Length: 440
Image (cartoon, rainbow, N blue to C red; front, side, top):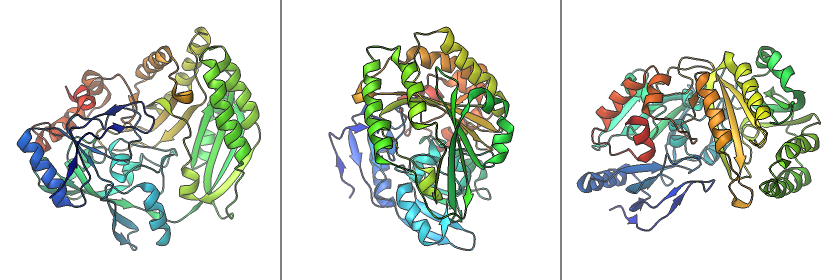
């Protein structure tokens, strides 16, 4: 018998969204998950599966039944020949990395945060950077699903291919993901090199930067011309780090948080803060090398609001310059640093923001110093307007104001996904208010 808890409050990591599910379950087996679904069908309740809770939106919220998959977190199989690993969907990537290390394997690409579950990371279309690399879900080669009526469905490119094409970015609305088979690569080390540049230089030479480094991204410091370029590439160098508690924490976190808090009373300070911190922390060339997963992931110290849209890669320069022009024309609109710019290869996953096009992701951020919200609506709306103008598609995990009408325009296969969703979950058991805005 699976036991649920009443009165559990769910909050996402950034504490920007939360909910009070009627019942909260932590199943340990497929049978227990089935029991929860049977109860939900009897009582006509909606069900939401939650992973690491890192999504900066209400995509995981529900007032029905919440299932936390954290106890279904085993590595089920490692196929050394094919370099594939099958895991339960509740495993945290942070726990998967050391297991892969033991077998001399690694994932070819990872997002910045590893306290996230395998099921959640693919379901929201999480990405990193590199024009030869797709979003993380492109590393998935097979899935096992549990549908709303309690049936098990295996899918891959060779069986139930249409479902597979939808379920790799599933938004939590198709079924419950039980297991995931991931394509790995041999374990590798990365060297990260960061160095200063200017917005003009990086945009004028974008193609050569993209060719020069396998995992290239850059940070732009709004209200300035400053850019920090970050290259990450395979290396044979022994691990080395330029991390330093004083600069990374005392200055890069504590002092920055205090100054950002001060700027909530004096918004004109933000432009100065962005330039000052670039000068303090980003003007020297820095090099680090380590195992790939230790370079890909870094600590998000700040609670924050973010938006992250994918636009066609060839629109990068126009869109970023338009954002800069907007900020210059509206001195009252303030933008925290950085605007992080990353690049991803196109794919054929129905609701992937990179569906059928190589993309540039432009991530904007507003921190919440000491938990205090900084006015951001003008910045948010101006950014969304620019992104929509250039054919942008929002990151599913991050807050946005789009509705079904927008998504039908953005995604050529939107209706195909809807048909699969309605077939797998005809009663809408896996919907919530976030998803109702997407599908209705």
